[in-house]
Image (cartoon, rainbow over the protein chains, first blue to last red):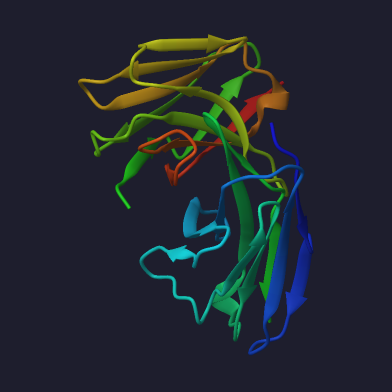
Length: 112
Length: 112
């Protein structure tokens, strides 16, 4: 398995501000993923982050809104920029292990 | 992203009963089918997964049945317990550990 931590666990933010979410893994991983889970909904992939290269974004998500950093093989950040109430969601990072994908506990974001 | 359709949206089962959740997929290139369990305020946890080279996989009270020709797979929870009450997501990907496409989720309630 993989031990994944995220910071912050939750936050309440004002419209127009930005929040950076951190994801730390207990061992080196090649691929990290960022998902969004809107209230009562399923998980939607935002982007895939590989160390040493630009993140790959899914349709409907853009780098200006969700910039991602991947400075090393155990850490990644996702920034939610210029937030609006529609960004209120749980943001989850996940990592790849052979034959399995594990998720962090998530960051619950509320935008007022 | 290719769709994965999940049903039912919600399910209520008596303690000791069998819970059955179904998923159907479209993309025949999918070759990894995991099920995740999510409790409120937590990230999804991998429950059990199957590859298309087998028709069934059992781990304890949890069984995945896979029908490749019908492009369907299902989760069976035997002897359901109140502690199984959670949201269950099926998912699919082209390679294990690759980007996952999730079903809509099933909220399971097991009554004592």
